[in-house]
Amino acid sequence: MTSGRTAKRRMVRRRSSAERLLSLVALLTGTEPPVRVRAWDGSEAGSPGAPLLIVHSRSAVRRLLHQRGELGLARAYVAGELDVEGDLYDALARLADTGRAIGRNPRLTPSRAAQVLRDAVALGALGPAPAPPAEEVLLSGVRHSRLRDRAAITHHYDVGNDFYQLVLGPSMVYSCAYFVDDEDSLAAAQAAKLDLVCRKLGLRAGMRVLDVGCGWGSFALHAAREYGVEVVGITLSEQQVRLASQRGAEQGLSDRVEFRLQDWRELDDGPFDAISSIGMAEHVGEQRFGEYTAALRDLLRPGGRLLNHQINRAPGDLVTSRTFIDAYVFPDGALLPLSTVVTRLEDSGLEVRDVQNLREHYVRTLRGWVANLDANWDECVALTSPGRARVWRLYMTASALGFARGWLRVNQTLVVRPHGDGASGVPPVRADW
Image (cartoon, rainbow, N blue to C red; front, side):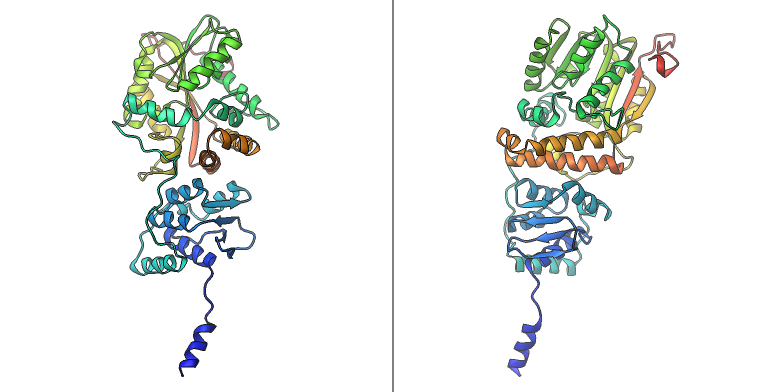
């Protein structure tokens, strides 16, 4: 009788590590993952033909047990404990098509929690949480104070000018490009975007222009060279100021462009005839956004225009838990719905004249940056770290998907400070801008 029970037990096939991994991910995320998994022991399981997730280490499982959802998976990917074979965009898209459940944390019932524990024990994955990768940041101090804002900007933008030159290409423009034709290169589309902003602002020779969050100086240099204006560019990144000033000197524009290491709250030398804020407002934070728009209004002369180029989230799509982007990419960044942006601008006494959504353009822009990163992978790793390069690949790929799906938008909002009698000075026909 005993021998019969033993034989019956032997007939029950033990699940492989890969099968247990798929089961564990399904339990923790609340969805059947549309991927194939290869475990550290070489076993594989999942849908044939699906993107292949390679789990190199039990540490990846421990991360997911201690930090379920998006952040746990991201930590494992940044640490090199989890890889995707093939197109990362395709893998993320398939996960998104399941209802974006991979980033959620459904409640674990007692029976599901017991199954998680059994799978974790069988995988040998129980243990303390691994330390977050070195690339993760947690800022201290008062949120959106000047000191903390500078630390946030330093974390993101002072990765290294050489690194950004490889990823962004020769334009050194770190915002959405504008593809006029399907055949446009990334560099051509970035030049078109800079010119689009100049035209919307109505720039003319002799104007004094403020560029808030000037990056490496590309807009300021384009505006000074092509439109004959004088530009003050401000940023909190020392490396950006250094390279922007160098580029200005090399192009013979030092007499018309000035780059400062300065917070927007420290500006006191207005008025300006026009102001550009390209990819800057995302760093301001919702609680200070009204203060930001009011400060820019005060720096703008009557009749002057402000172009606010800003990434927005879909209405109602508010995430309250800590995300991969906040932990690794843009600490303290905040994406507002377009309605909030327009309301704050109008509350500040500025009149909205035009809004243009460029989200499809950002899909192409981001995929172009990922292609640059992959083409220069070894050099980018040498300039930063393997983890930092992985952060940029994951965030740019996921962002491209977000814009393609409409979860993210990017809008250019053109406003004017009216004269006392209500006159705007904006031509009534767009073609005349």
